Figure (cartoon, rainbow, N blue to C red):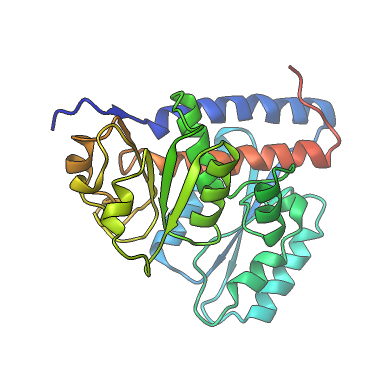
Amino acid sequence: MTTTATILDGKAVSLQVLDRCADRVKQIVDQTGQTPCLATVLVGHDPASVTYVRMKQRRCEAVGMKSIKIEMGDQTTTHELVAKITQISNDPTINGILLQHPVPKQIDERAAFEAILPDKDVDGVTIHSFGTTSFGLPGFGSCTPAGIMRLMDAYNTPIAGRHAVVIGRSPILGKPMAMMLLASHATVTICHSKTQNLPDIVKQGDIVVAAVGRPEFVKGDWIKPGAVVIDAGYNVGNVGDVDFDAAAERASMITPVPGGVGPMTIATLIDQTSLAAAKQFGLTEKE
């Protein structure tokens, strides 16, 4: 379809992030002789998770970092997973840790996340990381919302003073997204499964972030003319949480699926791993 909405090209912006990251990795290797390393922990054999881990490993290698994959079985217990994460958290050769989620149902995912040391929580999933995000302190942001903020910044998207509507309240997407928008001086409304009159609330949004995990849940006529639409969903069939064609007719800016939020999430993970390594090695970046 033909649309006048600006497409927020996450793939292009992510490549810029990764280029800068590659420069940082080279600086680390040149100054310390050590190569930054990301450990990915995969529990079970969910096909989508296997694919995501493979993509993240490739991005690591592309910027000159190491990536090691730790695979655990479908029947892994919370105790076993926490023990493994604790072990690699204490390994000085590993600079960042990613626990691929979701994990099998028998595992207490929050307990597993909390086993990651804050300095190695490059996915921004711990309570510590949420706290630093909320209070504007140094730390690692949850990768998807942090990637969204980078993407909007790359397109000079106005945020201060605008009404942002976040649909979804997960602790690693909706909630930190709201905190990041609030820190950028937006007025933020968080919506969820119990929200009444959702379409009417979304229609008030100058910025709409959809993170509900339901294909084409957000309809085009919910979108305020001129709004910025961020689709953080990824469903079967490469479909997002927003009815893209209909929403693009009304939006001023919109992210595609795929090629919008997804590449920014991975690029942010890789970038934060390189930053973690630099900090652990006691380096400061050259201007």
